[in-house]
Length: 356
Image (cartoon, rainbow, N blue to C red; front, side, top):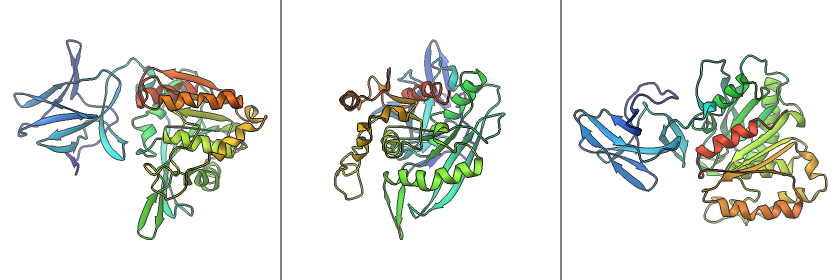
């Protein structure tokens, strides 16, 4: 059970609970009556030290984005004073430290709009939500649109909370580094409903996008409308969904981003990962790469990952697919792991490549 330690409003920026002193970063909590406080980071637990009425912990990291779990007297809590994100099928606090990346800073410039759209899906037999980002100071009609997917255990809000995709685009537009485009972010953790039961089926996103979401959202906002004005990108599981969708429907997309990304779908039919009882997937979508015209389908085909990502061996093994099939790609390896510190850079770079 997770307790929410207040009813105060949640802001995107963390409060003064996180501060610097003598070149070190600290987290300070006001829990006067607590007997014990600790912070979990991955598999490690770090105890706070009580200083008068406050509890203080020197933070054991220096990277920008870090999911943490705060425990008060052994009970995990969710602090509204810290940013809240969705990861690992769980709501987490995260702590963000300065990393010199001006693209993720909220500045006094025109900002875009985030719209939450709801609809009943005939494919999942469930209510679905997706988030639309509309750039500032321009009408939506005629804009290009990027369909942007999160990873396993996350949700449609992840790219605009932990990922800060909307803030990155606001800053890039203000700097004149990109032409404005819209975003559509769907819940890739598709819950297929059977009566009162639900099961996760990541494969359904492709049909939902092509048959339901793209026609619906592009009719309403009058953006996209053709292959040249439509792209798709995703991270981790979202990269699997992206690869399958764009290979099965190259007539729909002109820009492709595969972040911490995979060409093969290693989830479908995997007894340790797929909750649907089915045979291992035969990777039929990759047959599209055998078509001599494949390289003409996309303006951009970016594949990237962090140099300390645990999935790096899989990424490197898939280099052979690219070589065998003669795919023209842009390939980048960033410093970092399988986390948002890398994915923010992937997205910012990709945004500057597409719809030019």
